[in-house]
Image (cartoon, rainbow, N blue to C red; front, side):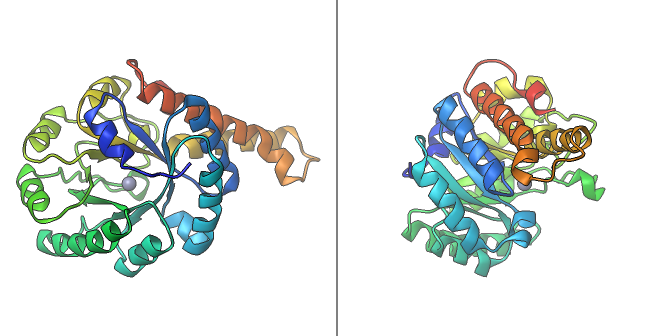
Length: 283
Ligand SMILES: [Zn+2]
C-alpha cells in the first residue's frame, strides 16, 4: 500500500509510534514489510548514508517502492539523515515519501533557510519532511557530547519552517552498544510546550526499557531503529556461517538471519502500539 497520508503525525497525537527501520538490502526490507503486515501497522523503510554508499538512490527507490506497492499495510520510503540539498531534492523527485534534511550541524538560521527550501520542494509532491535540532551523537564514532535540543530554537524553527516532523536530542544516542541511556523527559516536555510538530527519536535501540511507555504517551510519532536489526542479522549470520562451513549459497545462509530480522522488527512494531516495554527486544 502507498504511504498516502502522514501516519507519523497521526501517531504523535495517539498513544502509538511508527517505527522507521534502516534497511540495507531487499532481504531485510522484505522482512520488515512482512513484520509490519503481521502487526497490521504502517512502517517506514529508511535509507541511510551507508546504504546510499552501497547503491544509488534511484535503485533504492525502485526496489523499495515495488515492495511497498505490494504490501498490505502502508509502507513509507524514507531518506534518512541527509545534509546534501541536491540529494534531498533527488530523493523527492525519485518518489521517496519522506525525507530527512539534517541541518543540525549548521547555524540555526542556515538550517531554517535550507529546511524552508526542502519543504517547498517536498510539499508540492506530498512528501513529508523531517528536520533536526540539537545533536544526537554517534557512539561508535566516539562522540560523547549530547547537544540537547533547545526549546527556544524549536519555537523559532517551527514558526519559520513547515517541517512535518522534528528529530530531537533528548539524551538519545546513535548506535549504542553495551549500555543504555534514558530520555530526559523534562527536556522533551519543554519542547512539546513550544510547538505542535510530532517528534522523532533516533537511536531507539539504545534506550532503557522504561522509556517506551512514556514516549508512546508523548508527542513522539516515529522512532528510528538501526542497531537492533543490524545486530539480529549480524549475530545470526555469524552463527550460520560457523555452523555450515560447506554452505556457500547466500539465500541459504541468509534464511535464519532474515527470519530473525523479521521477528525482531515484528516485536518492536507490536510493542510500540501496546502498553508495555519494548526495550528488551531492542537490546
Ligand atoms: Zn539518526
